[in-house]
Image 1: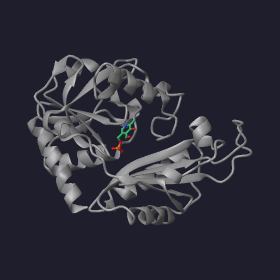
Image 2: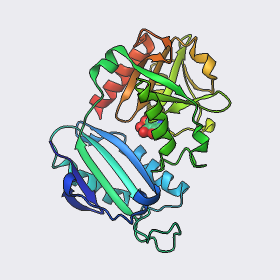
Image 3: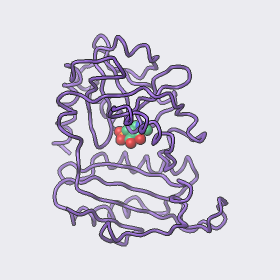
Image 4: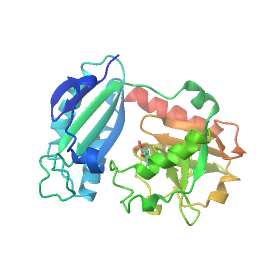
Length: 283
Ligand SMILES: Cc1ncc(COP(=O)(O)O)c(C=O)c1O
């Protein structure tokens, strides 16, 4: 099944989609992006993703110069061509310049929507848990970038994930120079200890994950104590359960971090996985 692309509202099959080699997203990672999925063929948490795209843009002074409803219409035109559930990638770059870093010649932003059939991680990762490798690439040092801007400049995350994958792990777990746990390469990190669900606060320098926010709300709605609190990497050793979240993965249990192993999914992780599935069904 093929993917479809919309570039500034013009639709092509993915294999025919082209942008300029002078596009600043390609040249400099001068872009912001979002990745989301559909549930019941509707974009899941659309309002949150639209808000974060504009917020990321605001943080790097990049105005998408399109109405969110128009963008939503471009997405719909692609969804209408693909049967079943989809993954949606939105990229807004600062547009085509003349290969210099200066902004003076940057034209209109390039807005790209890529819709492809939804491809979820293997079921085994949900049934038995994934593995994380601790990687100490400082997230704050990501080109000095604001971690809450979901920008196209992801080189240190790419390298963190490559380090984890080379060692045979599924995802990287990033820890800052103070030894505080941050987040995955493309996921939010959670642990459970004595019945309390805990995830690092945004202030440590992480992305404001959308699934994170909804999982915290789902925990509250089920009477599960949950908090945003910083914890050191040493706290992982006596965590009772560990899981990660992201827009495409949803809630994924973790069975291993470096040499520490858990029987996954644990009971609270299971409850949150079920809550997330209920949410998908109701979308
Ligand atoms: C660095 C980082 N943290 C967390 C997440 C998870 O965020 P969300 O739940 O909004 O997909 C992502 C998603 O790609 C990410 O790139």
